[in-house]
Image 1 (cartoon, one colour):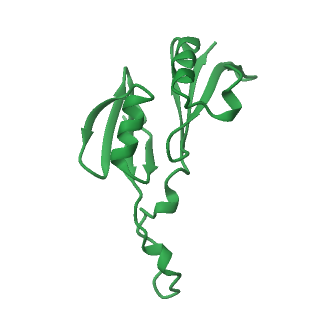
Image 2 (spheres, rainbow, N blue to C red):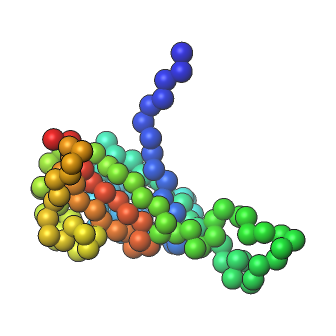
Length: 136
């Protein structure tokens, strides 16, 4: 019998070392593993992977014989998002508000949605969207 389990978002970042510092120091994640271009971070039961999208070879121009295809092009960094389930959404909001990491849509407070959540959004240093939410 097949059974899927937890999902772990993998967010592309320009510089993994800088991103690790941001997630640790500003979002409160613990660094479980960091080996240069890849990191595993955890806060309570939430796990995130960060991978470095730092290939700049695409800047040399487009070659129709050899398309851009490394999968780690720097322009990918900041294009991802994830949602993390939280208990204590209002307390986390206050904590992260003090860290000045809130997305502009969340600066006025935690939102109640039509689909049964209270949530707010943050942006990492590259622009990846991390939304924290609590089911109500």
